[in-house]
Image (cartoon, rainbow, N blue to C red; front, side, top):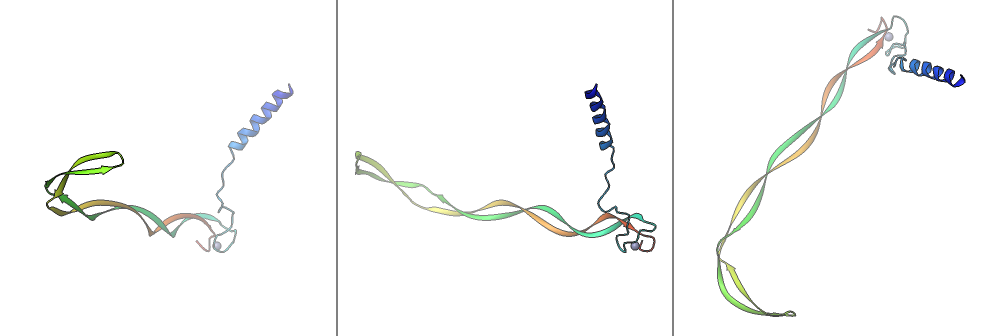
Length: 128
Ligand SMILES: [Zn+2]
């Protein structure tokens, strides 16, 4: 019986806690400009602020690359190392050309620009 009463009391307390109003911090019943508490109204006020805008910039990066031409065979040569004797073919490049590649690069930039926002403030009848 005692536990049932405790459960009912707990349920009533939890329901009343959920029904509480959430009062904003700036709602104290006084004018935000002069501090008066007569004829208080909640009015929207425009405030200057800054906002951040994210932008993706795409630009081109230039990079040189060597394109090799054909090579000619300069013969077979003999080598020697710790593993033993070996033969290898020696290829000599004849010519090459340089090309400039365009590589697109994207960077993410965050810009901070001035803006306005609406704020609810309390004002008295004289300040408005
Ligand atoms: Zn005022």
